[in-house]
Length: 239
Image (cartoon, rainbow, N blue to C red; front, side):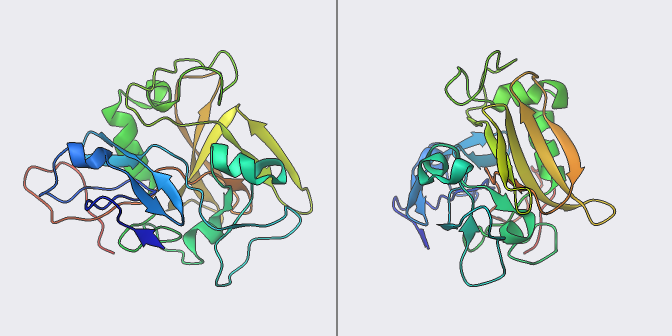
């Protein structure tokens, strides 16, 4: 399902790039599940600029299940919403029913869903959690409501407010253009898991513990490994 179209491997998810690739090659285009994605380097990390939109859309009154198909919800049950904002995934579906933090999940081979530590690395590089949200939010009001507080997108991450879906028996979509909520692969307490929240009215990014049944975005969420170097100040994860 992953196709290298430029001679430089790219993905729909954040990556650490091989040592022999230069910065320019990080910005080349790749395809995953028939969709085109571009990348941006932020500090030691390389992140995708689009929310992941992989899999087959199912209706909101159907729970995503452990089968051979990657399933997604689209805001208000329209494919155009997935094209514009990316798909919405329940945690177990995103993880492909493996509980280990840093697992591959719905990512291409060689990539995995990032942990809260990896999101923290991003936030710290951009000045800390209180301002990092603005540094990664897309500017303007197409994909965020006014006032889109603090949005500069100085990092090039280009996060959008994809909203969320609360599935059956509630069956409603909400927070489009108000919140960009991204899953992590990290476990919290009491059976919950961690997510990272952006909001149209604040400049920060904040982790929250929540139930797995919610459906959120998977944006810039996977990491390609390379050999550790003495120059690196971040942690490596063995897959």
